[in-house]
Amino acid sequence: MLGARCLLWAVRFCSSAPCPRHKPSAKLSVRDALGAQNTSGERVKVQGWVRSVRSQKEVLFLHVNDGSSLESLQVVADSSLDSRELTFGSSVEVQGQLVKSPSKRQNVELKAENIKVIGNCDAKTFPIRYKERHPLEYLRQYPHLRCRTNILGSILRIRSEATAAIHSFFKDNGFVHIHTPIITSNDCEGAGELFQLEAAGKIKIPEENFFNVPAFLTVSGQLHLEVMSGAFTQVFTFGPTFRAENSQSRRHLAEFYMIEAEISFVDSLQDLMQVMEKLFKATTMMVLSNCPEDVKLCYKFIAPGQKIRTYAEKRLFNWGIDLQTEHEKYLVKHCGSIPVFVINYPLALKPFYMRDNEDGPQHTVAAVDLLVPGVGELFGGGLREERYHFLEERLARSRLTEVYQWYLDLRRFGSVPHGGFGMGFERYLQCILGVDNIKDVIPFPRFPHSCLL
Image 1 (spheres, helix red, strand yellow):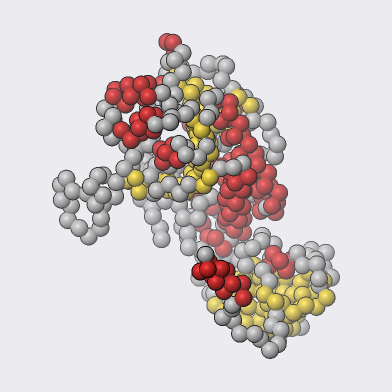
Image 2 (cartoon, rainbow, N blue to C red):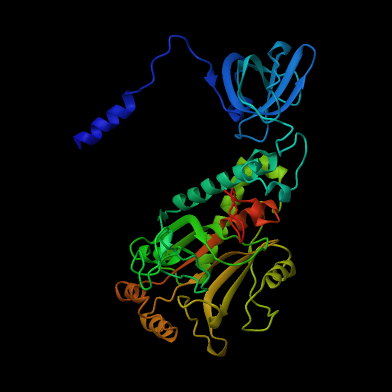
């Protein structure tokens, strides 16, 4: 206890930075500078990258951006501060006075007293051209540079805001955040599309594994969350997942992020669907509220507050056949181009852990998908089979009893009705922004035959 108190004292009162004799220029982000209320000539320092240079006979104009906002800060300087090194893409540090701008296009501008070029940029060989709107397909060739464009900058800021909004939603609703493992011995989806791990630089010896069992990159944190749902009534995880699916489609990646949740003492799909709907709406509302300019730059695909309604009454396809992407998009369009829930899938199409509805010849399980315009499946979830004998029989039929004995144990010791869902984060971003290709909403896309950087 004494050690903890000493540590707190040290954090509060100790600093390795010497006290300056003269007050330095206050360092501001471009976002903070643009939003500054006090423009009475305060000396500030701004660091970032040059987005445009315009040199006149007596005045030099720069636009500097540091990624904190879509809008750049205008810098006005005496022409004597001009330099050949001040080019589009170069990094700079500007010190001067923040003053009210006479132009109607911006509230403030930085009257520069000193401009220091930190890093040069040869505009002639730089793949990102000044004032040119590059297609997203072109930018995919330069994963190390494309984040410097307006469109990718906006998408990545929205991605960051959506991440914060999701964590905020779960925290505000009493969920416990669980770090589920990336390395696993479980195949949650049962599809077999797994990346298997082997130690590098070692000779492969038959029947020998680093972990004594075959290990894979996770396809889902669901089974680990189910373990935790035996001690916490509401849990979630948010992290990378991996699929070795040989697909070049616009909606698939080999590495992507999933938001997954499990809720104990839930015995109806309606309860799960309400949480899914609330998460979708709350996250979208926060993104639209906090990133309005970034969202405007992207194609604004949905409006806040749209009603998500269920649709499971009318049979449009042959029973027992899984829905393909074109089916999902047709359903969404048929229902008015709004998000649509599809519930109660045939048992044969779903993994062993889905709860049997015991509904006669149709024989369905309590599964649910949320389909959205332009994307198709966004959420997938359902009730879990908490009844020991039902689960035991399904595992036995699949010859998985030995592998999932631990999963059966969860039903032996204090089992409760429970359910959960997963949401593909990149597909969510596609949905709200109208971005056609999933490779454009993740910083470093991984897909078959491509692992740049």
